[in-house]
Image (cartoon, rainbow, N blue to C red; front, side, top):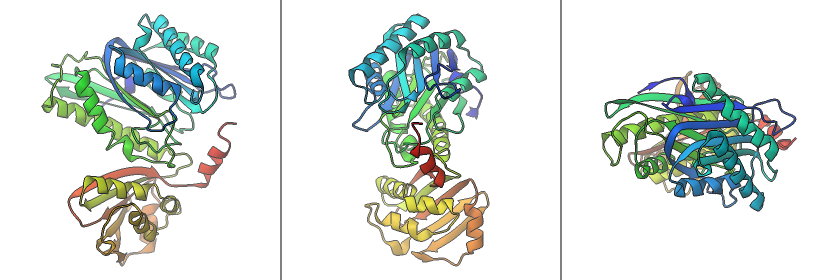
Length: 408
């Protein structure tokens, strides 16, 4: 498996575009994106666990579960189309119909994604005009994929995309993805918005199984601020144009594609965590030596979501007591007198706690390690062989500034 260019257009038969429709009048940024496959696709997805679900989430859940195939995705930034009642659902249907007409495909083959301000209504005339413009600008170059990735950004500071190719069943298979996410990130399914495309041939049943299993170790393991969005959506669409024998059972081909999807989703998840609103560092937490996988996940998430730990990372302060404290309220039973804790980054690795008490370490060296833009905390519980890794970011002054005036 090797990394390649292209993002969502790396796979055979996929095109994309990103344009400015003027959804947010005060901004000159691109705000609508489209992904299109030349032929029908299998689709699988995961969606927000928030009881308050945006209209596009409910719309997509129905399409993924009941439509015979999908062929396009239309995404907008600026307005979430959440808490908009029946009008919000009708808007999704209208957008799908407009895209279907522009692309000459059934409206039931169009998925919809939205992100932005909750409660605001979509400027439908601008958006239907935007769909026509998108359809006319679809392309399959790496730049077309990047334009789409940029168009779905809100408070993101960088676009997020990746692609890989590998061999499955004697054929070259490609998989690529893009996502957006910077704030309101605390998934219990996947993330804010993520779209993965592939030319692999795989049954809908096997694709669904792989997707639902994968998010547990990728998008479900990130947190920026503890807020689970109303719009969280992760969609994977595959058109089979690679020509490999269709994957219909759990075999080596199944495992190869599952591994590729995990590479894509792990990369995108880490990009989101590191681009958390106001963040200066990606914060990774590895828990090792746990007795069960479930407990490893609980402890890892407890550490990565602690506001006090996140603030210490921002201050480059090796305040390990906050980490041990977060482990203690995770709901997992363990012996704190056996725990070892390490900090690691490009600047080195340092043991700061041994068997529950401070190790003999240099505060100066610890500060140096914590001053990098990617920092890892490792907690060895010495209870068993299970482990888990989560990703988050530091907590800075700018997080409050960004969210205090988000609507303006």
